[in-house]
Length: 522
Image 1 (cartoon, rainbow, N blue to C red):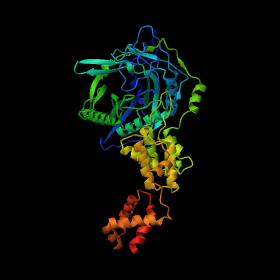
Image 2: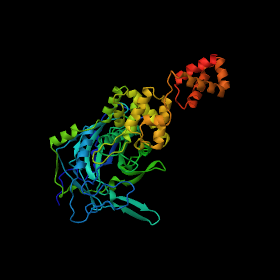
Image 3: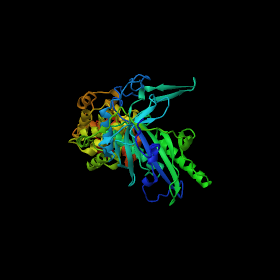
């Protein structure tokens, strides 16, 4: 058997986290564990958003699909079947590497990682342990001047999914996920708190969604984290590292790190050493538990995959992908701020955009930022973002719908904004009209709906209608009218609101205020 020559072939992937790779940062004093330093590194397994699996023609499965229906002979490890590399998975992984400032290698190779478990039909996983697709790089966190280094990015197969049936005491295997493309993104141990780890994961999710390489959905299992944690006294050598496996939410990841830090500190303060364990996380107890120790770790017996030739990428291929890269989150945010948006509005747009639907094979979804860009053409960006964040997104949220459920086209909202800006309808009528379009999923033009619903604004010259509504409002609210006459101007707002109600939003609020003051003086 040909084995790839490497002096550390039996060492686990997480042992790339060597002490010499730990970057020096200024001392961070955390009130939760005074005098202690926390070192955190994260391995992320992100499922590549490709229509087909990494080495077969089978479609990538979607949540809720019938078990064992998207499986090829190769996925189920039938003898004699051979892998055929999916070029789209390579392209999306290169996009990711470029977005993370990593060096894409012109030559990379695939290894077999052997272990025997029911969710691995072949008895080995195809990965890129020793000759990864890319290495190096960094990602800047959103808070503070912190950059987390990237050790390497590698392509590998996903495993099948096993589910334990408690009633029958049986494990059920679903091969739908087997063979799906994964990117394993290994960070340097540059994080110093649970909050920085959460920031890293959220920032990485945003980058992957931005370039269209993964939907980053932790709840559905397409983005999973293994976290390495160690603790040491300030100024002392780094402590023993433990790995927490398969964390599937940012909240639980922070809880797991916090629990593990306190466990390490308790052991060290009692005079005990910290054993190097691989651990799981009990969400109900909010504490980690031992899976296996370093002594129990298997020898994965890595060897070059004899059925897959080296992956050779030309500089021209890499540069072609670089030139077609979409804007990354930092660049998008800077562009929005340059348009005059406030930091809050930019953050809201970016947050909504991060949840957009990611298409297959690099097809970028039409999210909130793309919607805004189309809408803001030849319009005031600040007016547009106000209608989007406060009115459109606000009404969708009130209906417990997401932006992906948005039934209002760019053309419809653009025309509605123009009607308000041109004083053809009032802002109040505009909000009512938007609500009508969303509730009825109407595709009609706002101008036609304005006539149909009688929402045209009353002109300033038509004081007769406005005066009639003002008199009716005073008669309906006599106590408030008397309070205004007695010198309490704040109550006037209630009368203005009544006028707007009577006019169904057609009256101009400022004009109504002037007419009310005139009527009340008489």
